Length: 212
Ligand SMILES: [Zn+2]
Image 1 (cartoon, rainbow, N blue to C red):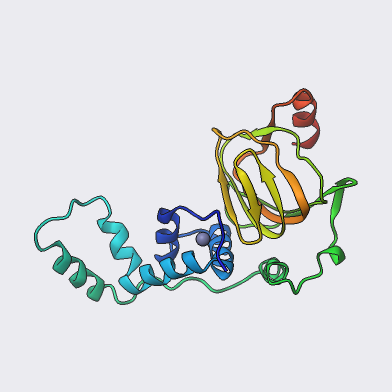
Image 2: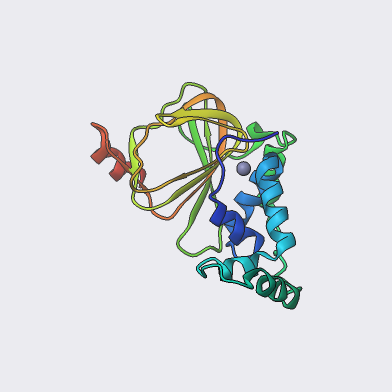
């Protein structure tokens, strides 16, 4: 199966080089479980030695560059191993994505009748991680992002002005993106942000005060 929304190629390259942080690593690894396309790209980068490719990415190609690249790949045979330690919630998230987990049994903090969240512990400084659950038809008030927001759809689907996002889709939004997502079926996502959301609709000022 493949997905419609993918991490940037640079992120896949960083992932293949073992340079992504814990949360980013988790999100890309889980996306690749569902997305054959990105899984293949990561495997190809890994077999080429992603670290070597990344270090060469700013260098213009010159005569003999391919031979130089191969030499560097051979000398870097011990490319950084990706940390395979998983915390408990990583295991739980994987089960939900794999349709084995029973999300209804989790200890959700219900904010409204149709919207719940579970804050997740993270050691990634500057990142905030949550599992979020929107019931079908739930519309998140219009907001923008003070910085970056990464979302991985674990089950169900939601849509916004840019399209529909389904199981496995990886969505990246920045301060340039303003949207109002709506759950098109009961939807569970892993959401990682670097700053709280900034609500922009009529009730924006109240929501910013209340929710952040
Ligand atoms: Zn993908």
